[in-house]
Image (cartoon, rainbow, N blue to C red; front, side, top):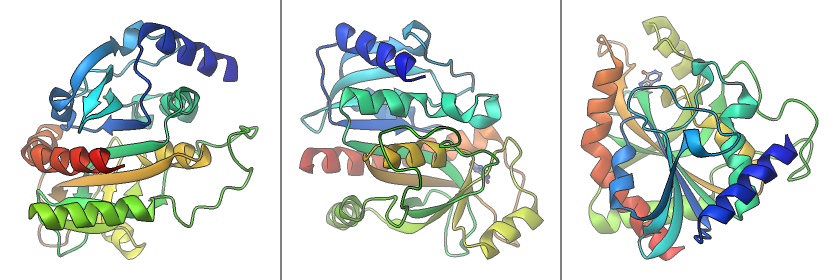
Length: 269
Ligand code: HPA
């Protein structure tokens, strides 16, 4: 495993002169931020040794190196989901590669169902914390030397980055909400009873990604900032049929706001 990670990192280093400190993962319907990056090099996942292949519609599957907010960044346009059949090791493989490449900050984004009754479709939720409700743990197995066997998780989402995002949202007049992201394995969206249960458990939003990557990044000492776009509502009385297309459409509409916050944060870090 470690050999594969190092092999992939070495391949990337030999194919781009870019040496970013910040990485971005673009979630469902959020790939357009990639268009704001002044791209220097981009690699389809299929061309990168040892990389899994993205299969979901709305994910084009490219690793991008370029400039955003005047800084070098790398971006994953499309991620690997557990529900697609990848193992947790595959889902988090790119994070291990990021660590080898010297990444210090990770920005993650996703689409999710809002369960907090105060949320509305199109809200941008800053992720303050998460609940890992996935059936497998990404750190299962022999411990990687990047971090301890029993990692502390009291600040999985970096407080400084969170405060910076709040400040920037205020400055730019962008409405943000905050909350706890609860990750399920998918691929089903929730039944009304499941939304209710996840709400009782403490979730403000529910989705099918992000948490594995965040856990591994945290274990690697990478600072994490996360944003969840509320694309549908799992609130009693407001639950309607939801489809992947609608999720993509709702996420699409909020992309410029998310991009604006990401860009400014990257400029400042
Ligand atoms: N549930 C789970 N995942 C999601 C949802 C949802 O309601 N919306 C977007 N991703």
